[in-house]
Length: 219
Length: 209
Ligand SMILES: [Zn+2]
View (cartoon, rainbow over the protein chains, first blue to last red):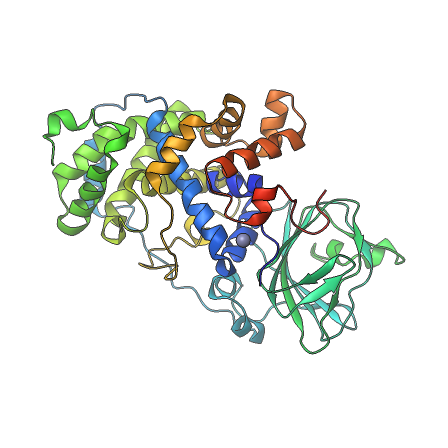
C-alpha cells in the first residue's frame, strides 16, 4: 500500500519537464508502483496538449516541411536504440525494470557506510544532484543524519521506518533541509531505496570527513 | 470527416479526433497528405511554444520543430488513440525533444540518457498495460477554462514558460506555499487530485512542511 506520493506541484513540474533529470527519475520510479499518479500524469500531459493548441502560434518558414520530408527520406536522424548492456549486479533482479535499465553495466560500486548500510552512486550526468541506491540490511539502522539539501527517497524493495512512520515499496518520501532522522529497515528483509540528494547530508555525531556523500567525488 | 488540405490548417482545438486519425494514417500508410496537414496545424504552435518555454532561441526553434515532427513521423506506428490523444502525444514528444536539446546545450552527457528513457516512454506499445483510461479529455478541457485566473496563471507559467513552482513564486512575487496551494486547488478542481491526500490538502512525504 503506497501512502506517500509526490505533491501536486512536483507532478506538474514533472509533466512540463522543468524537473532536473534525477528528480524526474525518482518520479518515474514512483509511477512504476502507483497507478493513481500514472493517471494524474497522463491528465497533466493532456493539459499540455490543450494549452499547446490554445497558445500563440508563429508561422514556420516555407521550406521547413520539405526539409523534414528530405530527412525522412534520407533516413537521417533515424532513431536507433543502442543496445544497452544490462547491469550484472545481483540487486538489479530485485528492482523494477525501469530502474535496473538505468544502472551502469557491470557491478555497482557499493560503498559501506556503516555495518548495515551501503550506498552505490548512479551516474546520470548531473553535477548538482546525486542519484544513488541505498541498501539497509534486515533490521539495520542507518546513522542519524540531518539534511542540508532536499532529499527524495523512493522505496524499491522491503520497507523501512523512522520516527514518522513505515515506508513501503513505491512510497515517495521528501526530506526538507534541516530534517534529522534515523531510518531503520524492517527486521525480516533488507530494504533497497533510490534516493536523490540535492546537497550532501551531514552525519550527526560523526566527523564530516566521514560524510559518505562527499566521497562520491573521485578519490 | 477528412478535410481537404486547404482548410485543415484552420482546424480548431476541439476537433482533436481528426488528428488521431491523421496520425494513424501516417503510422499505417506513411500518408504524406495527413502528415502535411498535421504539420500545418501543429508546427506554428510548436514553434511558439518552444520559444516561450525558455532556453530556445527563435533561430533554434525551427530546428526543434523539425526534430519533433520527424519523431512524430517515425513514432506514428506506435501511436494509440486509446492511450493518448494526438495533441497530448505531440506535446510529450516536443517536451522530450526540448529537454534533450537543453541538456545537449549544457553538455550534460547528451548521449547517455534521453528524456523518453527517463520518462519511460520508449516505443513499447503498452508501457503500462494496466493503465485504465479513466480520464476524460473533454472534461479537462472544460475545467481548464473554468479555473480562477490566479490558478490558471500559475499553470500557464509552468506549461508555457517551463517554470518550476519556485520560479513561478519568484516571478509573481508570492511565497512558494501560495503557489503550491494554487496548483493543488487547480488540480483538485479539475479532478486530477485522485488521491485523498490531494483532496484534503494534506501534505505528503512524511515530514514535508
Ligand atoms: Zn502515487
